Amino acid sequence: MAVILLEALLALVILLGIVWWTMFAGRKRGELPASRLQGEAPPAPAVSPPPPAPPPPRDRP
Image 1 (tube, rainbow, N blue to C red):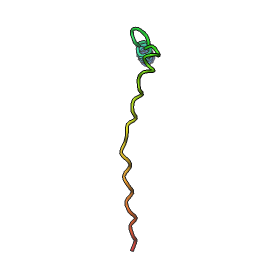
Image 2: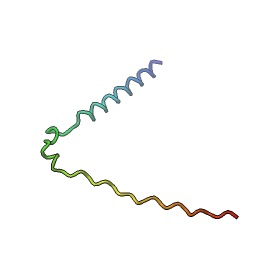
Image 3: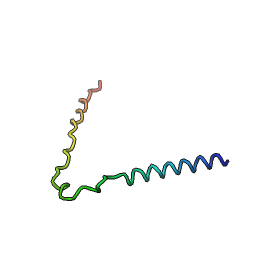
Image 4: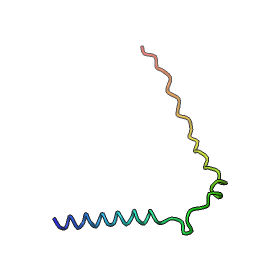
C-alpha cells in the first residue's frame, strides 16, 4: 500500500514540475511590446476544398 501511495505522490510531483516548467518558461525578456504585435498581419485561414457532390439519385425498378 505504501508503494502505491509513494508512486502516486511521485507522479503528482512530476506533474506539478511539468506544469511549473511550462508555465514560467516564457521569453527571456518578457512579452513583445504591443506596438510590434499590432503591425503583424494575422495568419491567413487555411482554404479547404469543397466537399464532394452527393451521387445522383438512382431510379428504382
